[in-house]
Every structure is written in C-alpha cells, then in structure tokens.
Image (cartoon, rainbow, N blue to C red):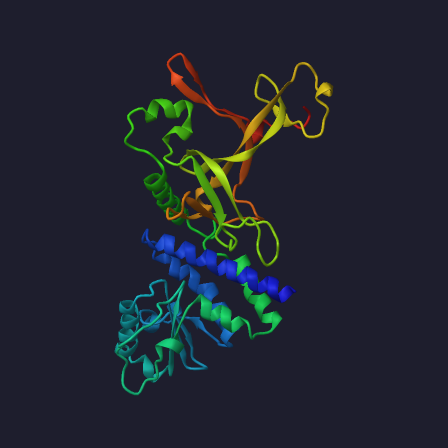
Amino acid sequence: MKREIYLKEIIEEFSILKSKIELLSKSNLLDINLISEYHIQEILNIVFDLQLVNSNYQSKNAKAIDLQDEVNCIAVQVTSNPRKLKIQETLNKFFNNTLEIKYSTLIILILGKKQLKYTNLLVKEGFNFNADQHIIDFENITSRLLILSTKKIEQVRNILKSDRLPTVANQSAKSVFKSKQLIRKKIVKNLIETTDKNISTVNYYDPSYKFIYVDLIISSISDKSYPNFEDEKTGERADWYKVFSHDLNEHYLEVVSWYNVEIVYTKDGKWNYLNERDKKSIPENLMIGNFGVLERIALENIIDVDMDCEDPIIFVQFDNHKACFEEIPFSPGYFNNAQDYRVVIYFELKNLDNNL
C-alpha cells in the first residue's frame, strides 16, 4: 500500500515540477535548471544506481555537461528544452570538448516530456548514442521506479517532497515575482475585459464586472477525474470544482464558492461562525447573516489557464485537497447607477473573534 502511495505522490511531484518549469521557462528564468540539478542528481543516483556529481564544480566540463559519474564513465545533460536542435547542440558540445574520451555514455534528461522521436542526429563515429535509450524524461524515471524497491521509491518521494521546485521557500524573490507576473498576465489576457470604459467605475463596487467569464473551474494539476465528480478507481471526490469569478490583484485570484455560511457579526466588523448555535441564543447586540464564501488562491500556486473547455480551467497546485490559502465570508457589491450601489463587504480573518 505504501508503495502505491509513494508512486502516486512522485508522479504528482513530477507533474508539478514539469508545469512550473514550462511556465518559468517562458519568462526566461534560465536559473531554474541550475536549481533543479541538485535534487535531480540525487534522484538519478538512486534510480539508476549512479555516482553523479555536479559538473559546475569542474569548470572544464560545465559548458558541455551538467552531471558526471567518473566511476561509471557517464555524463548527464539536464535541460527543459526537448527540441531536436537542443539535443544536437548538446552532442556537439560534448564532442567538441572531446568528452567521449572520458565518458562512454551520454544521457540527456528532459525536465518534462521528450519528443516522440529524434531522427538524423549527428553522432561522432564510434560513440554509442541511442536517442530512444539515452534521451530520458520524467516518464522514463517513473517507469524505472516500478522495478525498484519500496525503500528506494520512498527515498525519491522524500527528496521531491522536501526539495520541491519551485516553492516559495526555494525560489529567489525575483523568480517568485516573475512567476506571479507571468500567470497574472495570462489571466488578464484570457479572462478579463480591458476595453470597456465603464470598468474602472463599476469595478470599484463590483470587482467581478471586469471578468469575461462568470463560471470558472478550479482543478488540481494531479486530477485525473474531470469531468467526473469522483475518481472511477478509488471513488474519492475529484480534485476539481466550479466557482464564480470575483477579483484579481497582484498576489491572488479571488473566486466565489457555490455555498454560503451563516455568521454573527458586529457593526465594527468583528465576526464569528454561527455553527450549530441556536439563533435565539445570540445576544441582541449581534447581527446574524447568511453570506457567500470567497476563496483566495495565491498566484504562485496557479500553474496554468486552459481556455479549450466550455468553462476556463484554472490549474492549481493543491495543498491537502485545497486550492486556496484563505476562505472568508463576504457580501458582494454592485453598481446600478449613481444612486443605487454598494461596495463589497469582506469579513477578514483578522477580524474573526471566537468570543462572539
């Protein structure tokens, strides 16, 4: 049972890594490969029983290869670029630096998914390089894991869990900022109206006015159930759900859940959940209300936006089956005209008072 759980978690972590790399590569964050080499090195050593070290410490090899195993005479190049041109460039550098004399095997690891075929690659005569065998990706690593011991599978799982890339803890401030800006631009481009002259006025009272789409789908990047509501194999609840669009700022996307909550609150904004309490037991100085629920999803956890479905799908890195970092009650605003309007009322967590 543990073996199956570990394998599922590894596949999910590779999926997260692949999606993040693709997203950050588009914003020219070339340092992502350098960061990933360190734990990829450990994983390859476990999975293929190697003794790889980082070539950045060997300046004469660093331009041609990323990792090297001098005991087994194996060199590894790590890249997020799966194109044939990149593969040929790697081969050319390898041979131009006469590394075939020292290393009998060259492995090229694609951080993501490799192409189906690589034909007509130019390889130095006498050197054994088979594209099907020596160009590998995350799927190849996962397939290899299936024949390994549970102990080794657990080791790989622990590395990915503890050294997930990229996370807020591991990324530089510059990387986090660029990642958030990139996904924010994609959301604006696909989901938000920018030509309506009335947006700035109405948006102050009703932030959802600027969204082109009312309905959105929030989905975990590891969900395999959509459009079904349950996993066909496990019967567990699917990791996707529908929401209503609400607002977007520099740090998070706000969406509205389909359910409401009852709360008690004061005139100065203090509040608490009603829960199972009898309404008659609530003091007269407190008000009771039924409000919508607003979810806030951090931009750094949003991986992609898919516009190919009926409703746009926001792919998110879930944490314990949750996409958001915060849920709060709220009352929506509106603007009908200069005499009929209301601003949004947010019941922020900082005003949650368990004594009410």
